[in-house]
Every structure is written in C-alpha cells, then in structure tokens.
Image 1: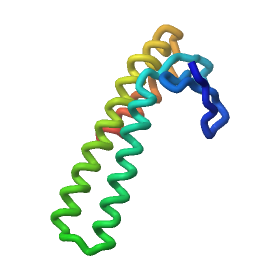
Image 2: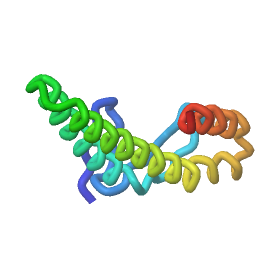
Image 3: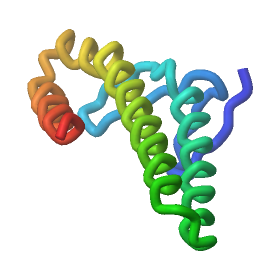
Amino acid sequence: MEKKKNTDGCRESCLEAAHTHHHAHTHPHTQTKAVLNRMARLIGHMQSVRRMVEDGRDCSEVLLQLSAVDAALKNVGKIILKDHMEHCIIDAVQNDDREALARLEQAIDRFVR
C-alpha cells in the first residue's frame, strides 16, 4: 500500500492512517479518508456560501446553505467521534488509560453543545 507524508511529518497509508497519541499507543483510524473527503466538500460549500454573501444573495438562501454546512459539519464530527470510540477508547480501556477517557468526556461535552 502506498504511503504518503502528511503535513506534520507522520507517515500514513492512503486508506487507513496509523494514529499515535501523546499517551503512546498506536491504532488504525478507518474513517480518515472519508473524513478528509467530507471536509474537502465542506470547504467548497463554505466558499460557495462566501460568494453568495459577496454577491449580495438573499439572506434566506444564505441561511439555508449555512444550515446545510452546519449539518454536514456535525456529521463529520459524528464520524470522528464514532471512529475515536471504536479505536482510541477501546485501546484506552485495554491499557487503563484514564487520561484518554477523561479527554473523551471533555470532547463529548464540547461536541454536544
């Protein structure tokens, strides 16, 4: 499988990234490609909304598009959270990593606001 270097110097496969946290465990994240694809579409959508505002489009149209962006962004967050729970948290429980579990709790609290 081809490897590529990302911006922080880590090596990752094209389809599945190995992820290392500062608490020294490594595990796969199976949804990396899907998340990156969704984020690229979100960026394009946001640029489109910006052009709508610059062009003076109707506020209700802009708000409708912002609502769609908000929903899509929340769905990306859900994918990341699910992947985190399926991989990081299982690893943390197996290694009795209470710090990782506390960070998950904080992340969920912020995510659901």
